Image 1 (cartoon, rainbow, N blue to C red):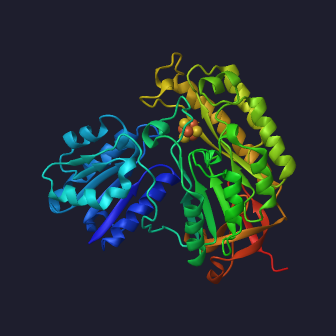
Image 2: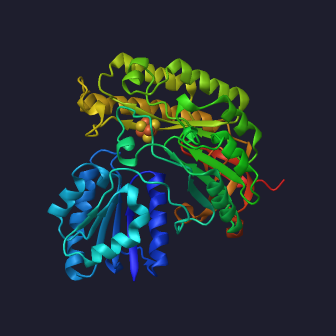
Length: 439
Ligand code: SF4
């Protein structure tokens, strides 16, 4: 029996798919990359991006012929989208050949739900409305054998006015430190070299626990685990980024010098409407503090353009902030409405053409800055964790610097999984070319 999982969205969703894979493999299913070979197809959805529903519904529609050819095929839909009001019922009504719809809070019950779906003549729906306690020790089948994602906190309490996450992933729930440490120790035993700690806001870690531990405390514990060479984390909310975290990154050798710190906008008026709880001055001050303590740290960000009420002057403030901060790179987005969020009903929605124009101007600026920043690395030697062999680049090896920059270079496949020193010879806007430094 074979399974295939289609995943949309962020790393949290990717990691949920790894857990679903683990459960399926315990049920003796094996993974297949071919849809038409699968006995079960799961669509793990996301509702954060624009038109997610249209895309997912289009994909479910494409699966109808497979169900026709193989009536025993099981089709299941899960993830953030199913957690939105009315979506599960809509799927059952429009695509009656879907066997199972379940939400983000009952992922751990998947084997049981699958059994119920097989016995049910109609689409079996189970979408819990409230998060239950965290279930530990679920099986995980990881996509990589060098780098692993480790969720440390679920949900979010922030309610940024444009974001659907708190409504579909619930309030913040931290995993117990001993469970996280155990998981990372097991990963180290299996030969994993790098872990990325995941959470919508990792800086909130521990606030809901009875134990006296915060995110810095957790990082210090994980830094002691032998075998793990690199620790990364995402995402950080600027309002919760403490001085103690800056010093922890500085002191702990394994924590990589890369911080993803979404700013979202450069105008205080827009930041307030977004409900971000910081000002641009506070954000710039934070970046300066990070850079004064960890000068080599790369800082990346997320920016939304065309938020309701954003004027040309507000947008100019975003450009000014980008110019001042000099991010290493940025994920830039055009604002799009998410039904159910406060921003969706705000007046003064920005015209699509204006949004597109602002996005282009922002990307041009950021690309210029990214290139300039990468140019500074020319001739420098950086530590790279070799991740693989890139056939599209004439068989070059690739890996990432501690600052999370992608590097291509010649070398033998035996180096995969090892840390090597690479001299940067040709820095480009998004990637770096280099040669292994034998010295
Ligand atoms: S911090 Fe804001 S943007 Fe991030 S997940 Fe929470 S509500 Fe959404």
